[in-house]
Image (cartoon, rainbow, N blue to C red):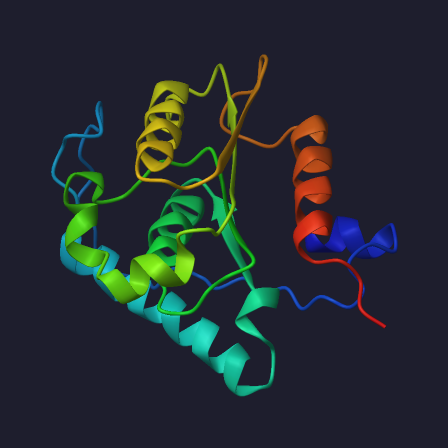
Length: 185
């Protein structure tokens, strides 16, 4: 994504950070609905790592209002959760082919200070209607739940898209990013 933007001369003033998931042993479990048990300790550890990345950028002098957290699939899911629970107000959050982690207990992590920090943070979600891994219904359910909690969610469905990216989705995300991160002199 970042390389594509760079080749086209887009977002030249933006730093992109792409963290990698740690190498840890896992157990593969069939994942058929959002109500199944999730790895709460692992999710909270990842959230704390993302919050550390945000803090590091703030410590470098980047205002949190110029930071967007986002990703694809699990990366988008942890970005949504970490963004919603960030103590710093963010410019935006995006998740592509993603869903809300720990959705049934989200309120537990939203202290009044945290909710106030990001209650007006816009969220972009993109999802293929043919995604066999992260069902479009999960993305829609996430968007609906977040809207019910007061967040502004821009949920976009892309016809025929499976678990991947689509040029129209990337164009829509680019427009959304540009609205939140206008070029600075």
